[in-house]
View 1: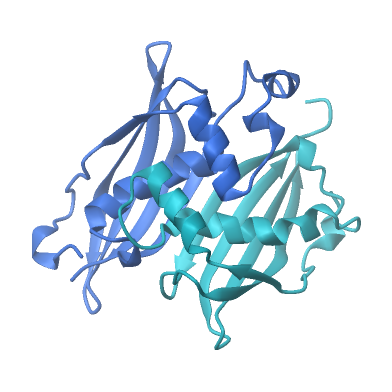
View 2: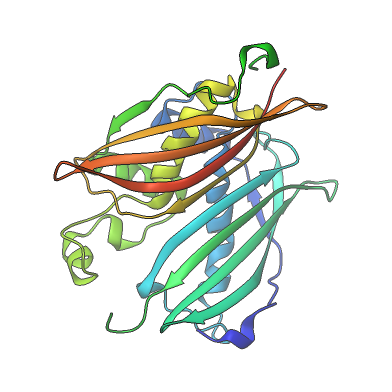
Length: 129
Length: 139
């Protein structure tokens, strides 16, 4: 991973809060109504391909584990709405051969309001570890 | 939504337990979008140093969120949620989500929760999620 990629921003990716996908997510976790808070992960995965493909960042996903995850909401997602997912590399630290990257994503609604911010800390384990 | 008058500092959330099956993990990969073979392919998982496939951290956090939503009354009440992933979860294990009220805010009324997910392994507790947190709006 390249620490100089800290601060990289990526173009917005559209994400539709598909009601049938939300229903499947609810069923898996036994939640009876609404959009479960961690459904936001599906929006994050809409934007991840850009990050995986970023050769300047050079993150080796085969060595990545998920360190921590945070979601903050201005409001819950609405089923059926289209959001723009804007990803950025918020920080990169290298410690003991392991790389720690925090990827932040803003989910913007049709009015340009950020309804949720997601932060994922990924740990790229040292090669051969 | 849960009423402010029913909440006190130190109050515990009801524990929520579930067995994690291979089918659950596959279903989660399909609905969540994370198709990393670490969660589906035992040979790949062994090459990464695990005895077999592990659940997604986000599966475990999704279960923790279900315990929080059940306490809060509805998903829309969850203002923030976070988790630190500290231990893997193997298929066939039983994960238990729990939490307690750390503090209460007024205007607008909200509860700050500390939350966790535990699993018993070889007779000892492990912590797939430690230092989880949530902020929940109260009526």
